[in-house]
Image (cartoon, rainbow, N blue to C red; front, side):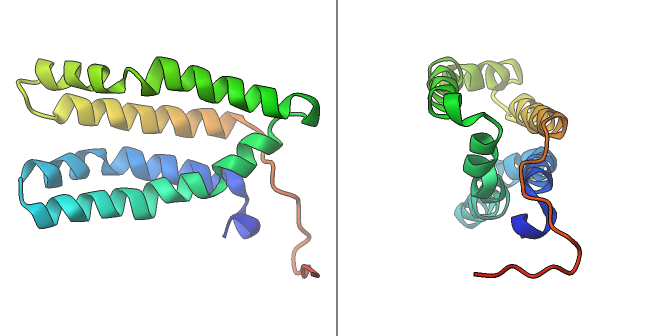
Length: 139
């Protein structure tokens, strides 16, 4: 699919899907029913997050010139890990605590992150090769 429509639309679609699924995800988890929790996690990972992860590596790598590609990607990954991934459990407790131990502010935060991802990706150039309509790919 990314080869037909490009990497950018797939990433934007995944980010929008994450935005739209934030509240239903927490509604399903808040039921405390194990089968609904498993379904929420399965839908979130299998359908939405994997659509973003499937093309992210190629999209990011092609967004940088060859001379700085490795350094640029490693720098961004490590800074992201320290600032955002490392602190995310602490940051997640703030909106849950502010919402009276209910996840709705956290769902809003997750939806806002998905929307920010979609908008930032929209501003980046498409990296997929341009194909002529009707052209076939030869091995």
